[in-house]
Structure formats: structure tokens, C-alpha cells
Image (cartoon, rainbow, N blue to C red; front, side, top):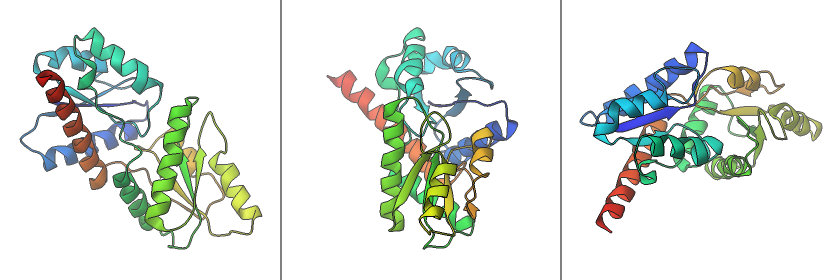
Length: 231
């Protein structure tokens, strides 16, 4: 079983977007049992889902765009409490070229032209590993788009998207686009939309490339489990 875990939000639109992503994942692999749960603020909770499906030994796929505290501490602890080994935890979704594909499509959908300077607006974190992941995703997007990308953070770190956009404007770069490096709508997406940028892309949500990446992470974790069992 693939058990996807998202952060969770009080904003129902965020939960709706995650469930839409899961429907896309199921459509790509209809023979596979796919469920989702939430770390906080939404239901079902991670603890409840692990208890409910423990007999099926699910593979936990984090719907996180980088490796931060939740992935390094909270999720392994939850697996241990459920009696499941660490290898049943897949890596974070990002950074990955498939997310670059989704980000590029969202920018195009927002109307951003191919020459526009781009600020990549991640959620932000106090964890240096998560910040490094966002910087790496900016590099991957730059490779895909063929132009420099400025990494920015919506919380806990600098520069913020507002600062990054202002710096580009001060350097004489008008017509800036913000790429929302977020899975779901909600507080951070609304904050990303308040910069002085001309275009702001929508969150990645149920983009097909994200669904394919969820399944890739699942397959990687299953392969790691099989190797450990054979050792």
C-alpha cells in the first residue's frame, strides 16, 4: 500500500488539492492501494492511518518538497511507534526534475513569458537541509527554463519573495514572475501572491508530473525494502 502523508492545513482547499493529487496517482496505477493522511490539522491523522493499515505494511510517501524536521524526525518516529522499519519511508518529493516540469507548466499557465525573471517561492524552514533543497530546486528549474532562478522563502529564512522581487526590480528587471513552490493553496500561496511580481503561478497540486513523482518515490522505497529483506 502507498500511504501518502501531507502536512495538513485548516484550509479546506489544501486538503481538496491533496485528495485531487491522490486521485491522479490512483488513475496512474489503479491496481495499487493508495491512501492519504495528514501530519496535522486535517483528518485522517498519520497515527490513525498507520494503526488502521499496519497489517498491510504501507510504504509512507511524504508529500513534502524538501527534507526538513518532519521528514527526519516526526515520520521515522511515527513508523517506529507503528512497528514499521525506517526503510518503509520514501524520500521527500523534491528536489527533482519532475517538479521542474510542473513548475514550468504552472508558470506558463499563469501567462509568464519565457524571458521573465523568476523567483522560486518555497515555504521556508529553519532547517538548513530544507533550504538547501529549495536552492537545488531553483538550479533544476534554471536548467529547465534556461535562465537564472532566484530562490526565496515564505517563512523563517531570507530572502523572502517580496525581497527577491524588489531586488530584481531595483536591478532594472521588470516583468518578474513568482513560481509558487508549494503543493497546495492556503496561507503560503496567498502570501506568495502579494509580491509586486507581474505573474504568480498556482501551487503544483495535482499536476501529472507530481503524481508520477509520488509513484517514483514509492517504487524507490519498495526497492529499498526488498534489498534490506534480501540482505
